[in-house]
Image 1 (cartoon, rainbow, N blue to C red):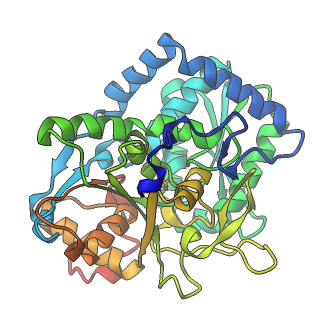
Image 2 (image 1 turned 45 degrees about the vertical axis):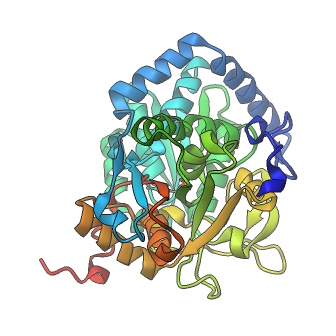
Image 3 (image 1 turned 45 degrees about the horizontal axis):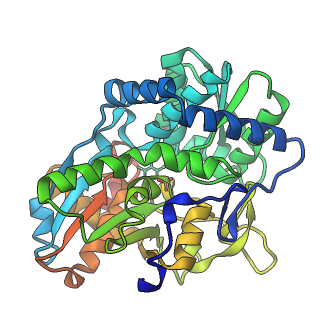
Length: 405
Ligand SMILES: *Cc1c(COP(=O)(O)O)cnc(C)c1O
């Protein structure tokens, strides 16, 4: 990684929303003015004391930030003596990191005078966080969700309805996340006057990947302060799971220019990256265009987007945020994977050893560490993003856990 020591990673994207050759804003003409307006308003917000103090207020008093950085001693004992710290974003209101971004984007929507929020959701976690913040601020909320996902994610659908959101079933394409995102974009273009589109991960056209990363980077900002307080030094490793990439960038961003910190992103290996059933866009995909940006995608030789597969619905996206594609190519972050099976074992282990039932998504990050424990030593400090709790997962996987009740 030495050769990249002169790069200031934190000044990206450039003014065109590019991370190297990735990212950008490849959209229909009808969408362009909307994106330019969001970018302009976001710039204003970023420099506004009032916006920043509002964001801080809701982060602290509504989400429950800062989240603790917890030394997981019993898990550490499985990592060849390395010290494993968990950044506990699973303790946030609604149970995951998603709400950091929703509060940020919805405060921006209100600054722009919008009364109606649209969002897409796959597993329902982003829909749930969006519906929650819309309830808080008394905004109309429409959640686009594939029909297939509506059936798979009944508890989250129920919660969103309870919070007052309208669920808009999507039948087009394969009726999953990718199609829901297309429909939400279409809605936004037709209702631009009163509507704001909240994207749930660090993907989509500029300025979304940058904006989502910025709102999530509170995770790494806090973790850095916390580890310096506890250990008086920076960690050797950061690790996080990768769906679209927002929780990972949230942790990584603060440390990108700390060149001695090694950074690992863990993709969902499904039934194995050499099978057809996985979600490892960086390991097995190729660059292409989806949702207004250029990035790594799972696609067939004709450029059709392939279905992603993972035991965790939150990692089940055939693309990846463009900043990750760039960080991979430039070599700043190492991207690896863990399979469904490995994630399930890590899920059980974490529950038993730490009394923390993790979401299946961060279980992938833990699984990678466990699988590679021999690579670590007593001198190592690792920070892992515990980006969600497992409540949403336990019933879907109960048959696979072998737990008798
Ligand atoms: C949505 C979700 C993810 C995947 O999204 P990223 O943008 O990659 O963070 C990971 N973990 C949890 C708990 C989620 O809810």
